[in-house]
Image 1: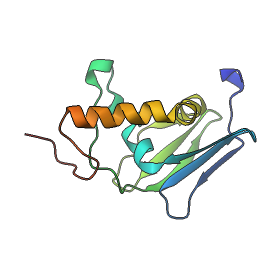
Image 2 (image 1 turned 90 degrees about the vertical axis):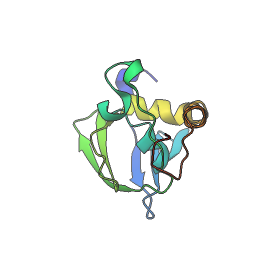
Image 3 (image 1 turned 135 degrees about the vertical axis):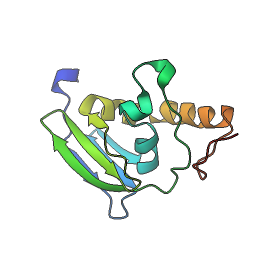
Image 4 (image 1 turned 120 degrees about the horizontal axis):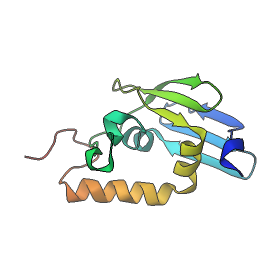
Length: 126
């Protein structure tokens, strides 16, 4: 599917607020954990303004999605119960997260390990 035509046919936050289901037609349905969406947020706060500024966010295992607001015809703004809500998740980015989830997630877990951080503690190592 061409990126310019990429648009979800379904976008749903689970009742427990821990999963975002995004479907691109019947063949591509992704269940994305709130934790992954939070720590891989496309916001400048997480991604920085260059690869060197990217921040590894620890301690978000239990984060929940508290809201989702459409942004034009190209994205959704997710708001998390920890107060984070500045990332605009474009349809292209959500599709990439779903289609390549294992790669994104294993990269994040590797970063945590390399930096002495974990999914349960938000404090930074000393």
